[in-house]
Image (cartoon, rainbow, N blue to C red):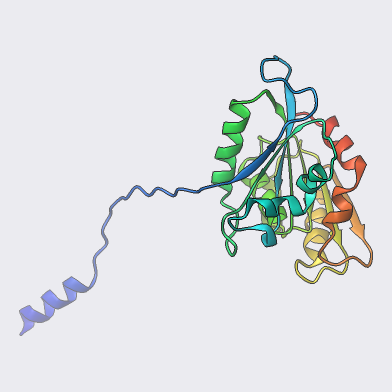
Length: 228
């Protein structure tokens, strides 16, 4: 009886060390805009803007991406002085797969005439949260970032590159992603000496992106930025 009890106790507690290689495949549909004057055979390098849409445009209908932000402006006839990469998050109820987005971005940069020191980042709502995440995960990749009503990782603020200028937009009456998210992040970044601009829209709810992306100064500001 004593032997049986000892064997039973030994079988209840084991610490095993093992390893497994996992592979995640993400299928990202995307739009890629080429500006006037772009020529594939030319040696001229152009800036590129990475745009990440909000949660409502996720799924498998790529046309949804043209409902807001720079893709909407392009569809309405506006020209931009840089390439614009606009992928679609295939998951309606999941966050952006930022590693997959960066793989797509790197592929586009490698296969086009893109100035790697002038890659800009912007996103709205869920895409704004992903933009903050990308800035934390890849602090040396982007020359500038604009976030519109995005959730913010305040505890990770110090991981963002201090040399990257940031412009934040948010509606004060936002009920989906509280205005306080941006207020706290901007305050924290300014405390640490970051170059941050903050545009707050009085009386505006969650849809602050229509006004933000219709701000001509935003694109002039992007063009002025370049990584050292």
